[in-house]
Length: 577
Image (cartoon, rainbow, N blue to C red; front, side, top):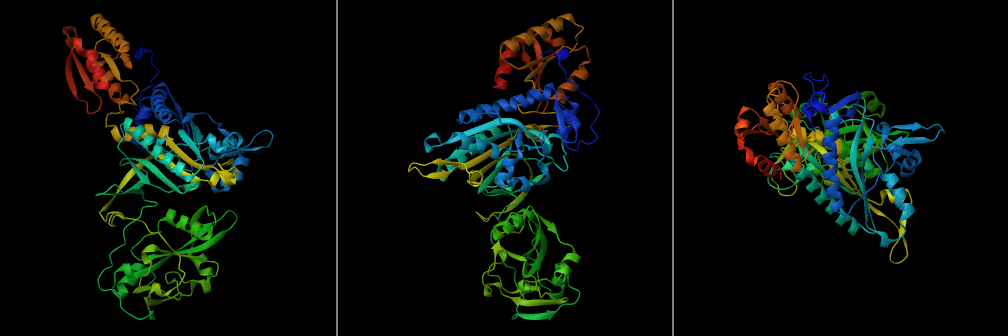
């Protein structure tokens, strides 16, 4: 490709809403153009990078015997209603009526549709296992789309779905997809980690996220500094905490504690660490048609982790709450509870409908101080081991000061960008959609399913966030729009122009993805575009080139070296291998 013929509208103007360098440089470099909130056109350079990433993903998925297909972008809403996800997914699911008044959705994911296909065509265990995937447009109606392609409403995703006769076969495919994803992200040159994660609205028994470590990441991961443990902060666990010295000793008794509605004031009043205080966090669990009060009890120096708490409520009640909402002081008072003095003792008598969940760190705990459900009153010497049938679950945030649950080593928190997610779905969708097959004994069984997603367009942002510098895009070698740009320093010099064209043709013949910058622009402007667009290498055709000396610049790090005329092609072939 000649630059003079390439549609690449670069600009020096910084987009007003570009908070991340990936967003800024893709707009300035002419890769993408915004057409609405969270909606982008992919211009030729952006399409080329996207195509390279897609091709790499396809190559790896095909090597693992997954089969590519393309499912419809518009799906009947009845499928989502059958699975129970139509209400659960919330307002991010864009639904509409077609001209015949049939409800439809723009798919953010395709579990229902693929299950319907398998239900229709797979009848016997002999046809299993099966892994089908697509690389296709998706839509999620984000309430706050931002950061360019990082959180767009319309995006390209690779989503794969596997079907199995038993859980052992599913476990095997889950590990195979873990290996496939590791291969994909390694070949893209990314510094990534696989971390334990929450399954969210997709559901299932186990999931792992593949994340790219980057300072701009929206998510947080907890990683051990001494072993391989890593988990999204939403589900990260921790080792049992060490109890501080000098616990408050008292037999179960009520104390007058004036003006102590906060953990800080209560800790100062009794002169004890917050560890020995038990605090109550009240929420409303939002159900499809109503809300239910729920109280979470934690140690005073812990914080509630919302995702853990929501999952704990759903497990305890076998309900499907969509979210947890804050409860106002007025709403708490209507329940007959005193704000700042709520405790577990006698709570169910005051509010019979309330769900009560304790953090696992409180299990068998004694020497506790907690609210007495009366203003200015607390119980001291509370021993939870003396209470029966308490509901203990992991609901507290894991923090860097905690210890690793596997090796007791120190933990750290790092920012991350999620680029892939793999799930063991089990029979969640096959049951709701009545998708069954005949096993070896001729009995009808529900399919065991796995689901495996990669944010293809998001990968473009992740690569740039990890590689780019202050001058512009730095792509990994596997994703760069061109491998080499041949820059003719002075296009008015006919000899240099001819030599540049000759080198360009030689590189093309060697199967190198090359761009010839033959524009009549200043050399400085050409180099600025090289730095902005991010081709892997720039080969400079300057005055010394006529004497057989070429300057080769590596975009990553902008290192320079001089190579001889006769070794130009071989040097670049080796560098790009």
